[in-house]
Image (cartoon, rainbow, N blue to C red):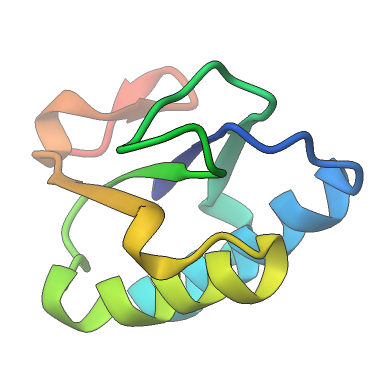
Length: 110
């Protein structure tokens, strides 16, 4: 934890670099160690958002440390800067997961 799932209609050439950069950003926004950030990228997806222009959907889950109103703008700007997708073509879903429902290393966090 935290976890970010990135889905986009774009074909991403620099997948590993983009995942690393997203991990660093999520780590800084949640004040959690990058060591525990998991990032997943689904690119070249069939997606439609008003039209067929590039779009992106971010799902962010964490045990606490989420502040959607503070995180939405930097995340949207990051998608725009790194992927060229306009911020009005980005949806973000935030989920604060109870520690008792998140496991790592064979046991739950709470």
